[in-house]
Image (cartoon, rainbow, N blue to C red; front, top):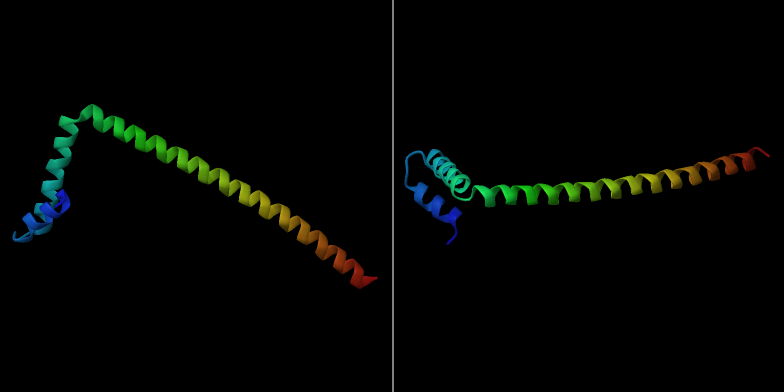
Length: 89
C-alpha cells in the first residue's frame, strides 16, 4: 500500500475528508522540506534541469519542423506559379 492509498483510507471516514487529506499532504510536504532540505532541493534542481533540457529539445524539433514546412511551402508555391504560367501560355 502506498502513501496515497494510506492517506485516502485514513481520510475516508472523516466528515470533511478533502480537508483532512489536504492537511495530511501539507504536513507531509513540510516534513519533507525540513528533514530532506538538501535532498529535496537537489531533486528539484535535477527535475528543473531535466525539464529545461526537454523543453529545449522540443523547441529545436519544432523549429526544425517549421523550417521543413516553410521549405515545402516554398516548393509548392513555385510549382503553383509554374502551373499558372503553363495555363496562361
